Amino acid sequence: MIKFSDLKLDPKVLKAIEDAGYENPTPIQAGAIPPALEGRDVLGIAQTGTGKTASFTLPMITLLAKGRARARMPRSLVLCPTRELAAQVAENFDTYTKYHKLTKALLIGGVSFKEQDQLIDRGVDVLIATPGRLLDHFERGKLLLTGVQIMVVDEADRMLDMGFIPDIERIFSLTPFTRQTLFFSATMAPEIERITNTFLSAPERVEVARQSSASATITQGVVMFKGSRKDQEASEKRRLLRALIDNEGDKCRNAIIFCNRKTDVDIVAKSLTKYGYDAAPIHGDLEQSQRTRTLDGFRDGTLRFLVASDVAARGLDIPNVSHVFNFDVPSHAEDYVHRIGRTGRAGKLGTTIMLCTPRDDKNFADVERLLQTEIPRLANPLEGVITPASDDAAESGERSTSSRSRSSSSRSRGSRSRSGDKSAPKETTMSETVAADSPPSAPPEAAVAEAPRSEAAPRHDRSRDDRSREDRPREDRPREDRRNEPRADNRTDNRSDDRRDRTRGGQGRDQNRDNGPKVVGMGDHLPSFIALSFEERRTS
Ligand code: AMP
Image 1 (cartoon, helix red, strand yellow):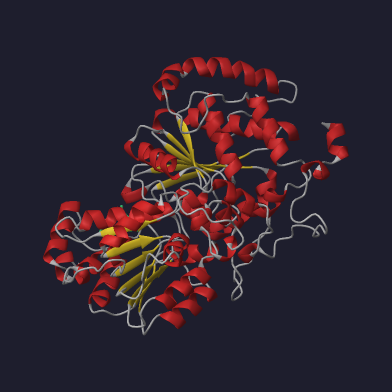
Image 2 (cartoon, rainbow, N blue to C red; image 1 turned 90 degrees about the vertical axis):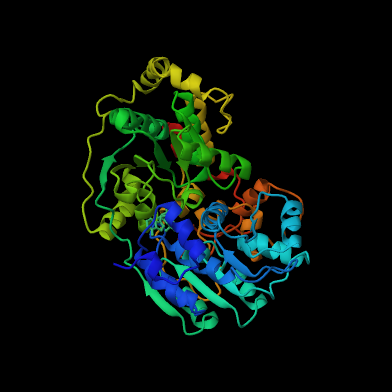
């Protein structure tokens, strides 16, 4: 078996690896590090969880160990699709550069330009950035990319999903032709293939097994669920989630709860908090400081339930997650594998439970087809408990007992304002919110989430996954997406812009989805009262 010491890495890097407790390189590391150290381009086809971050950070540190950075001219560049991934890569550099004097800067949205400018001005060896923020700095004349010797593109397929490919192409063109490129993607969509053919030079292709199967350390289950009444389904589903968590008892040390939409992330987190569960949301509409605080809390065990959207939690390396709940069946089957892969890591046991409504049948079938296995059906712990007539009474009765039984947990949450739940509305109000967000007659967002996906993105389409785009603040979105938006250079939070963007028509990988006939004369905004069905209203 290959050892790190066989890999010609800088002795100080080897010492840092030893301190981190690693002895043997993972397959992607063993395959990518030697050609990277020779200065060759590398095309790594590997997913998160395979150790791919170290497969580029370790040779980079070794190669950059000699030499000094000049002001505003970074010597290397790592591009990541999300702020969290960028921050994770930065942490990796911190771990492995502990015996070096290399400087780094993290350019992500949600942080003021001023601090980032100061770092760049001093000169950095490693610049880690999301594409949008990087180009913002470049356009402000604060950054030169002509000194980049090594460029890394991490999670290229996610960049494609998020519509970043034109930005990536532009960034490539701003760096020297002679740079070394280390390019990582979990899959090789035609658009990714094209980019690598254009910008990589005779790359060493290193491929590690694609993860289309769930780890054997994860126990899976699904609960088939149908609301007793359409207007009660959302609150009953949240109630089912609580019952499933309770059923797991102490085995559920902590959990990530995935929802397909940001609105549901907020609602589920608020609902759990209201019922005394220690929960907080994470998605792209939240301020960066809040996202960081929430993640830190979940990592260090002071927060038990992280309610997340795919993009916010994608690729995050959080050890010791005992449970993953899929509050929604993901609309892209491979997201299921990514989601449940947050548990059962590093040989530890994990449990995952999904809630599946009749509306999810098609997506659920896709998940089972991808896994090539049947996910065990679990009994619904609320079967027979919820009846249309008893819903409200059951909820209010449960509310009083459950909040009593969890009062200490509620107290321990104390001043946690992460979910902003100080004045949490009653459950009925929340279901009303849901109803208002998504009127019974085919809510636009839900329709997009449920529609089939077209795999191959045509060249130059902006390939935007609606959920992904929705999950990103302004600077972390592709340039074309925000061309007509006002600029506010020192803004740290761009949530309102993000929302505005959401009202535009989606394109990209999901563009074949049938969103109904285009409304002429109203722009993309459809007033919610027009979407209401009078039939539906009468019956409910
Ligand atoms: P990544 O795919 O880069 O997100 O890494 C996933 C996890 O693997 C992280 O927790 C790393 O710290 C860990 N890791 C990286 N390299 C090794 C290694 N050689 N042996 C064991 N674990 C590793």
